[in-house]
Image (cartoon, rainbow, N blue to C red; front, side):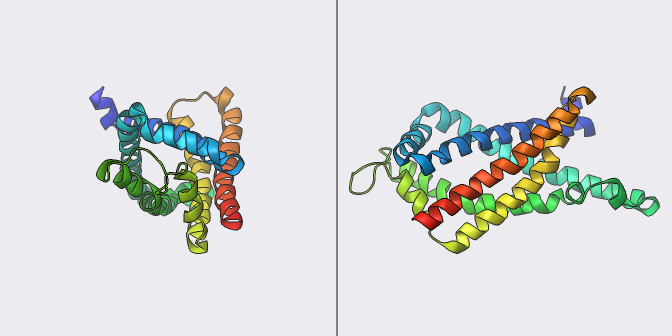
Length: 225
């Protein structure tokens, strides 16, 4: 089994599994965040549960961090090897004629998403870890004790137009990244040709609607704060 995951096919398969895991997390993350548009109280309750439930904090969160790191590191390794292999291939063939622009430039969209993740961690994850585990405040309450703090913190972050612009650009890159990455993950996981058309349609819908949903949340709070 270890030999399989050291092979080129094995690495692509593992990359596909990490991609599916992260796509599921994105969907779950969106499901909670969209509550902030319709019900601040529901958003606060869901955020407090996710931020204090032991299984999320001590099991799922470490797995998520590992999945993010693994996906990016393995993505850069595979991209470097693919680029090295293309040097000889492109000398004989026109690479642009046989592949999409996105498939040839996944590294750039990946770097843009990585930069966004750093910003997102600075905005939300690091302050949350500091509040809960450094300051020891697991209540989730505002300083005045009148209600949970999660909705107020979210709205405050989206007041700055530069930050909102960075989020919008990042989610556009995420959409482009998912457009190719999703279908690629299905292919690496061994999807049959009979299901290929349906899976590609699902990948396009997911890759467009989910980033648009996150953009909508950021713009909604920016213009309504």
